[in-house]
Image 1 (tube, helix red, strand yellow):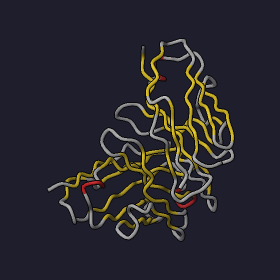
Image 2 (spheres, one colour):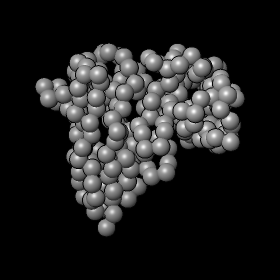
Image 3 (cartoon, chains in turn brown, green):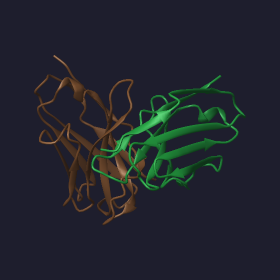
Length: 123
Length: 108
């Protein structure tokens, strides 16, 4: 059974940093691209970033480019999102999600999602 | 950036009725349109990908159609568990990956 478990969310002041983690199980983690998608309170879904299965290709939304870094440790089956220079508008539930297709394809069809971790940026 | 516009914003129907949800893209996206369902307090779930393909475990009452810029998700004979928010997503031209703003399907 595929499971994705996010952690690392919390309350942080504007300008601060957080690192989110997503622990994966139930599939061969290194074979799939992974993505982060966020959802501000009461709002819709917003794509944040995608990382290839090997970790060699990264993609970011313009709103986070230069501030957020996506990475993975395939030996630990874990996806990360390092978030720096946080702003109030980054407040959201952050979901990690698995790609539908095996690498090297990156389909950005997200067939399994974690339950999310809440990041609140406020003073 | 491809913008996706969903309509209506809210759809009020009764169990047993059929639902038709629309998604319009600002530019042609071929057939690269997916649909997700999200229930309160839960993560989204992939329903349909590439316009017509049901994801694993999705009931046959969910179907998708369209091409280019206009797409439809149809739910025939609504079940109580179908009342949720539905999002469309395009992958024809990314990054950025984009989602529509959602249609809330509520019980009438």
